[in-house]
Image 1: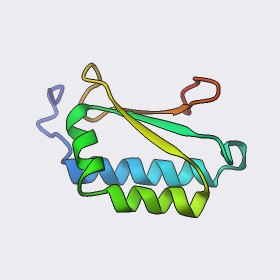
Image 2: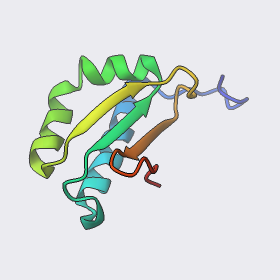
Image 3: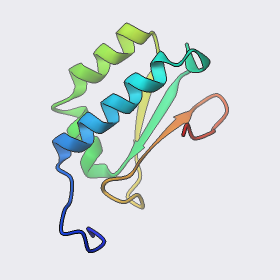
Length: 92
């Protein structure tokens, strides 16, 4: 699962990475007021919905961006996608 690296990120590390990416995207004026969907592995989604729910709500409140979350068991544990829900395009 680690692709030979001998390392797998923790749920905490993945959550921090997702929060940083979200903060970066919501500061970008191109995405102001655009609802975003975050697609993650189911185990990561559990972490985001439980322990990190308040942090994610804070991002929504500060940026006035609506966030939604979906699980995708086909994603690698360390992979996530940010989707513009209006266009269906993945944000790179």
